[in-house]
Image 1 (tube, rainbow, N blue to C red):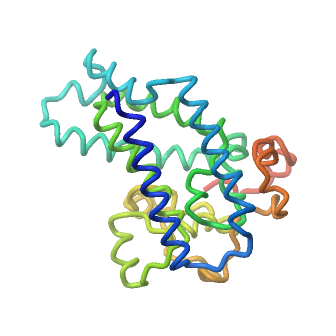
Image 2: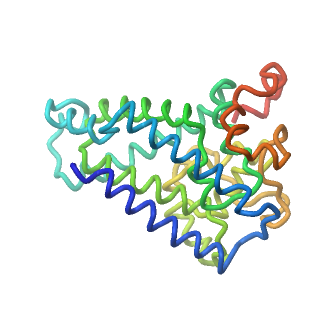
Length: 274
């Protein structure tokens, strides 16, 4: 897997350019805040997180998967199944694990303060899909390493999952117009932007729904699916209550955001649990 980083970067850039172009020519919502205000900080966060991950874990999760394969660690290395089936199972189970991780980040106040920065974007577009606090990214990395070791996921399965996760995160955060009838069909197989946008609503019960990134099945099966926002997609408000000023979109403010605002006040809000 010597080309792992190159493969991921190539897929990221290709999908980003395609979705950014789609947003430009066929936007779903009119944005009040310019890309020039939001994009530098959102992209800057992605770069910081990528550099940190490469410094702390140069081989990332793929390297851990190679070790698991070599030493026959984990569930999937203990059962005799075809490689293609093992890859599919691994991708599906990793997606389920990320779904539960996402719910945990909404439930535990200290983790929510990290994840809250992702929700505090005042608009919703392709760059929101990579707008995560570096500390959250490192926690997610550690979580995925544990899951990969327990499952015995192959390196190729991890690479497929990571590319899919990055790609679908950009897609389902895209400010792209998809015909209603097409969206209705697609959201049985993949999380669409209209489905995931509900999750970015300022309304707490809507924010605590539609946790999936790759597939919509977990939300439907586990009771966290919500079809539409109450105010409609054009009328809904994106973001969180505490950070509504455009000044909060600066990179330095985003990095400090988890440490701002009183934790006591947030703990009193029952809506922070799903």
